[in-house]
Length: 61
Image (cartoon, rainbow, N blue to C red):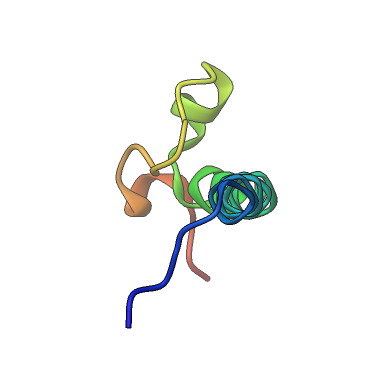
């Protein structure tokens, strides 16, 4: 039995996907900033993935 795809289902899926991305992006960005070296953060070069070595960005006591 085939199910008919309605325009509402497509638009609803697109809108909800946009909401999910808009909700998760700040958390992913902050995780990338916290794991990046401070030089990259200061120059605003961090986007979605961390840059630099983790050994250079934190001092472990």
